[in-house]
Amino acid sequence: MNGYHGRYLKVDLSTQNIEDMPIPEAEYRRYIGGATLAARLIYDSVKKGMDPLAPSSPLVFATGPFTGTSIPMVSRYAVAGISPLTGWWGEATSGGAFPFRLKGAGYDGIFITGRADRPVYLFIDHGTASLRDASGLWGKDIYEVQKLVKAELGPTGLGMAMIGRAGEKMVKTAAIQNDAGRSAGRCGLGALMGSKNLKAVVVSGNVKPGLADPERVKELAKEALATIRQNFITIAYKEYGTLLYSDMAMTLSDVPVKYFTKSVFPVEKVTGQTLRQNYVIENCACTGCPIGCGREVKNFHGLESVDGPEYETTMAFGPLCMNFDLDSIIRANHLCNTHGIDTIAAGVTIAYAMYLFEKGVLTRERAGLEIPWGDGEVIVKLVEMIINDEGIGKLLSQGTLAMAREFGRDEGEAAQIKGMELPMHDARAFHGMAISYATGPRGACHLKGDYYSIELGTAVPEFMILPGDRLTSAGKAEMAAKYQSLKDLYDSFALCKFSPLTVTQLCEIMKAVTGWEVTPEEILTTGDRSINLKRAINNRLGLTRAHDKVPKICLEPLCEGSTAGTMPDMDMMLREYYAYRKWEWGTGRPAREKLEELGLHKAAADLYL
Image (cartoon, rainbow, N blue to C red; front, side, top):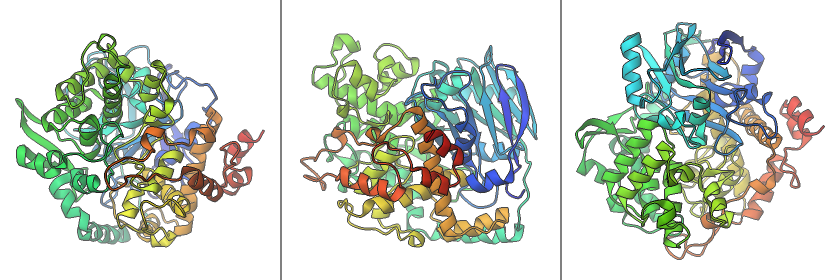
């Protein structure tokens, strides 16, 4: 099989049984890889009322056919399972060097169940796997673990994905970290890894699957590199990272401020330019990426190097909390990366705590400290409390929905969808984003259809997804659904969401790598299959149309900024979206004929007994 090893590693931590798990070519063709194939593998384990942290709950690490090739921006992997945070489908992705090392170890992915009776780490070296004692790693942070494992196994050629203190404590917003500052952050999958007593996955090797047309892959890699370098945004990413968007985002009222109640703030204090002017900054890039949007801050408070905050993190610990002190934002980000916490969830829950404190709902006696708006030191302290699962941090670590319920608040005040906190793109700024948020398979997600990029000038002519009036709801749902399907597949190919490659180029790459003839229409159908499979998983877990909603606090019109007085028409867009997807309005399930049309026969049988 070209582009694939044709197998996953299957690990039962309870019995310590390790074996190869062959994957038929037909499954790869239908689901491609990454998060979509992970959903297919996890599907049979899904039961209503299941405990995401039970030993039987699967955890899957997955690469795609592009991973390990010379195509740029493909050092990506997905990790998937039932989310400990939300109870629904959960997936997260990350880049760095680990994805190439995982594919090079001789497997397309890893399917993990069970719970070890003591801390262990999984080591895969050139197709040979073993479980090793991790008792000496338990309690260590991300960077300490990497040093200790390299001292044990050798300093070169290793890739590692691991949990920190938060994952060990099964904090519901715990992330899985890899390399330096790379995070599979969302959905709390670090808690799932911690529940299995699995401290790390360590991989090594240079085992490469064959390519259908190696020379054509080289040509397409050169063409892709030229496309990336010619893209106008590449230079800006190189210079300022993802923080390049800060100024424009504030102008467009796309940055949620003061817990989604404002949109105007002194943006000049938290831009990429300001970061570069006030700190010694170096770029860092994932393997095979010509952009290097990552940042390292040098000589920071006695530390030689710490991870620089990207856009989402900066806005979450910054304007969302009315904090404009970059120093505290960098410290909070570094704490999250060091101990494994989702920075978006942490920032949103801290902002909600500040909101409740201002209203007198969360008192000093209950919190154990004053939580005023804009206090960077308090933000850092609360991050530490979340990581340690102590004091008020224990509640914050469970997300805004749990906080609202604890204090008897209207759930529309909790800035989450399906239990996952909204990212730093305001639903009022781009109506296409609002419908993507409401219907996203893992909840509030700006990556499963980053529709703001369409309204900012990107187009997908193959599917007639074109820019329009960002503050108009009519006619948006179908384009948003198509774009959602396309971007969902990026995590199957294992392709960075910042890649500017066209759908036509993706089809050509698939043919050169795998030998399969793929049309743009087939790409879209596969994306639809991915979205509907994950929807079926959620339906089996109990999800209905009632869960497809944006909370009031993130939807009601603001009194300032470029979106003042406007809000998305969610009912109209949901009806258009459901009609396009062929989802039942009454139940929120994909219609039986839609599932059959996509070849999801088992899901059709399960949902329509």
